[in-house]
Image 1 (spheres, rainbow, N blue to C red):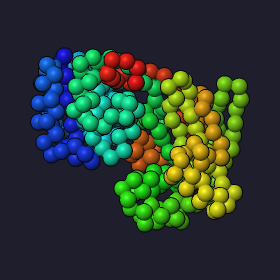
Image 2: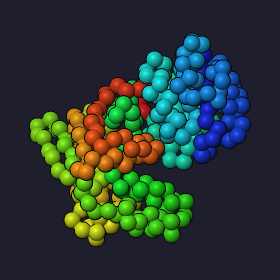
Image 3: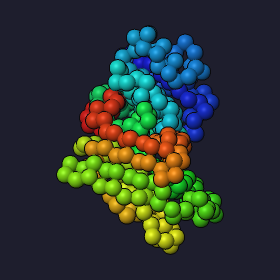
Image 4: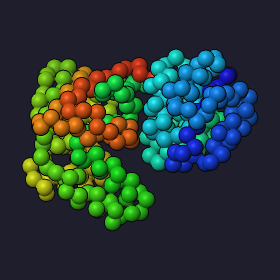
Amino acid sequence: MKLGMIVNEKSGSVPEDGRAQLECVIAETGHEPVFAADPEADIEEQVADLMKKGVEAIAVWGGDGTICCVLQQANSRVPVLVLPGGTMNLLPKRLHNGELDWKKIVHSVLENPKPTWIPAGEVSGQRFYVAALFGQLTHIGASREAVREGALLEAVSILTDREALDIDSNINIEVDEPDKHREFPATAAAVTPAAEGGLEIAVIAPDSHLDLAASALDALVRGWREGAHFHSDCASAIRMRHAEGMPIPATIDGEPCEPGASLNISYIQKAACVLVAGGEA
């Protein structure tokens, strides 16, 4: 297989000689490694160049942001082998059954590669393959990472930050479900694309600071579903609007951004083609 390679050596867990290491391992498997003419170019340019070179698949080694950009630029024209090179590694964990050793992943997948479709959500033209968080509680993600790294004081600081724990429900959310339409104000929401179809959404709409703090801690310890005040796993479309016309803070597949004050979130059943080891991810 002629395998294109995109490596972000600035990502959290990719070594400085990541390109050389990946090239060596790919060659060991009997496949032909191919780099873009300028490996330091923007991802869009690297993907376009690899396509011109006629690669049959692309291996991407980097963080969640790098991986999502490659998936979107590849646009299912070739399957993508996703390798964990960041700090959270959300999508690689899901695709490779929790395995985070990139060398093991390369060998197991390329011994018996199977193209598999995965879904995505899309907001403001940007796709997310794992999760999109909206509102001030997006800071909880940073707090969870701080706890994992043992920085408990930093985690507490993030959770008790005035903006992070702002209880104003200034985001108006509309959710279209198969048999109903729901509308409600919210402080924050988490949205994920469900493999079986539709968008899953969990909404935080607290009545008090105590309620919000409890929800934040619940989300930190047990996950965002358990900390939600409203949950749906079958939404066909979601619309969000900031009551004061302000940009809605968001974290899309681990990347902070402000996609706008009025958002339409849609579901894409076959959003990207990835390579996994011999079967469904």
